Image (cartoon, rainbow, N blue to C red; front, side, top):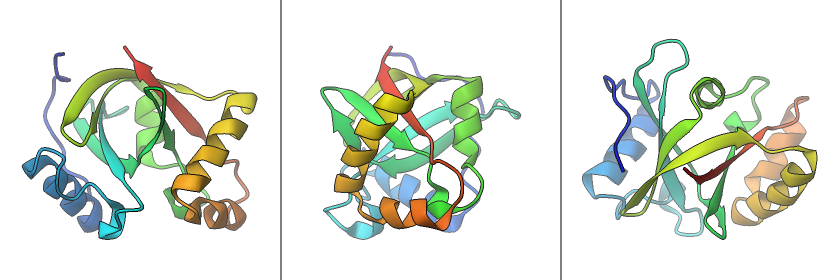
Length: 148
């Protein structure tokens, strides 16, 4: 697998940057749980910025089934999508690291039927997604990431 080319632009938010740094320094073996809660595992997805073309890294909850991953664009229930949502639309080829294993994936928006199934799976992994859905008027998008 080749890695995405470009200049890395660290996340703007301190907590996101710290999560990614811990994850990467340990090759995915430390910082691989959201808020250090082992019940909330994460993966780190590397993408190209839609506008900047720079390398972006995003920690997302680990929602996986049969080698397919879901990336839930919740942004904590905010009324807008996270920036990586637009990156995935513009540049669907991404790298996903799950613990110490990294592969190239292609991201695509789940259709309505897929979204319903993956939403259930996501809420089982991370219950606060239900609260996020109640906080916002938007339907929270879900990307499915399949090996490229």
